[in-house]
Image (cartoon, rainbow, N blue to C red; front, side):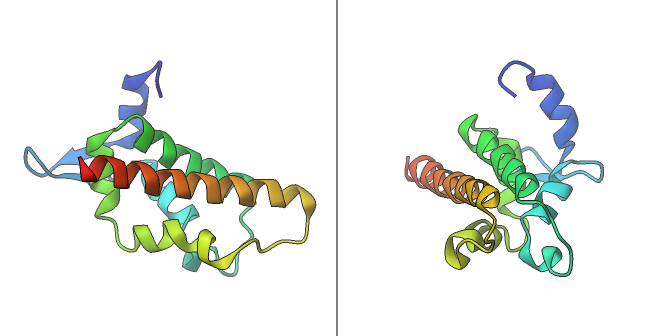
Amino acid sequence: METQPGLIELFLDLSSKDDKEFIIGQNSCLHAVLDVIDPEKQSGHYIPPQLVSAAFLLLHSLWHDRRDAALTAIRKSPKFWENLTHPLMTGIQSDVDEDYRYYMEICCYALQIIALEAYYVAR
């Protein structure tokens, strides 16, 4: 994202309602990312923790790089904050040692996103 900002704009596919408000476009990769972190959409399906960790990493990258248009659209998506904090509240849900690492990454990314949000919103 840091070296190819134009490429990320293509994948995000944000549409502008007006000058201040952005919505997630129909072809945006954010739909898939938000679905991957949604525990209701995970029920009944096995989603590898590596994929969930990658989704959280993408969200963290958006917060870290302060992609305001994307952040505005993501913040307004239904139940985003609930889905983001869900791994922190439920704990690690696997007995496999390899999965433990990814669950720790997910929790770390979630906490970093919350910290960045608190820091930027307070300013």
